[in-house]
Image (cartoon, rainbow, N blue to C red):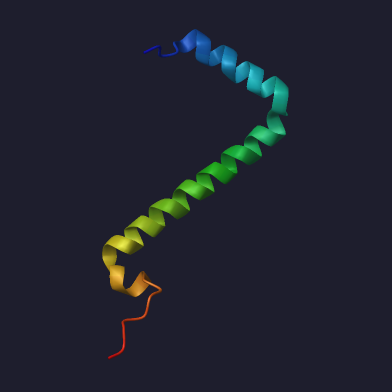
Length: 61
């Protein structure tokens, strides 16, 4: 399978920079970083105590 080299990655980055501009790319990067950190914190919370984070109530007899 084909993997892009450094030259191809630079060309792709330049095209994206021209299409979206620097301001939008910074906003997208910030949003992506926030999403990744929230995802990681949700995973660690789930590993600590999966019963506390569960929204389901236990069945009543």
